[in-house]
Length: 213
Ligand code: GRF
Image (tube, rainbow, N blue to C red; front, side, top):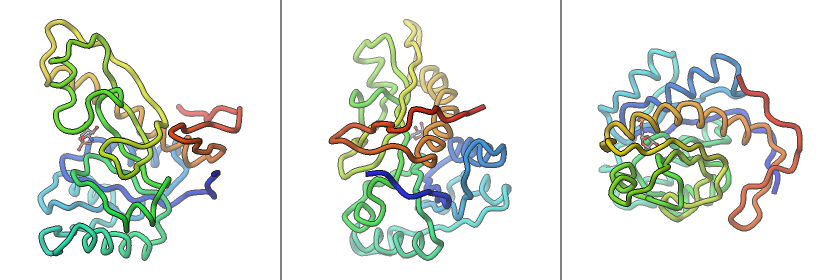
């Protein structure tokens, strides 16, 4: 399927929000043709909320502890997003798996970023997993979200080397620098349209490249 033009995005965070910052910066530069309608956190103390406020964005904390089920929390999230006319959801360090209400409302309209070359090393501590496995190359994946943890069609991947003396921290820092380029670039591709999902594959159907500074 080819999506309609997308312009209003929401960014969902749980933590420091450096990927959120890269999206804010890209929107402000004009590299991503969208507005950020709201930044939502499931943690009240997420430092990323302060980044959003500094940028003059609306922020919202939704306390997942106040909801009896995953579905109830997701239903509330859908209400907040649809109430603001959000058409594309960006997960940026949002530590939570979605249930049917979110997946049905935003199927193929939700992106996630993960610091490994998926399908290798999904879940927690992917940088440590990469080091422990002994891979020589790792990187970042931006993908559409489906019901599988760190699953979903892959929009874009970028690689970084894994060095012999890397720790999880040094590898994470190298990947993070690449994340901050990859997320805005993937967003620009998705927003530009001219793509469809074939099985597991995200396929560009329009040959002209997205120009990205
Ligand atoms: C990033 O490494 C992202 O790939 C992962 O969680 C981390 C979030 O970092 N999903 P930040 O909050 O964007 O700085």
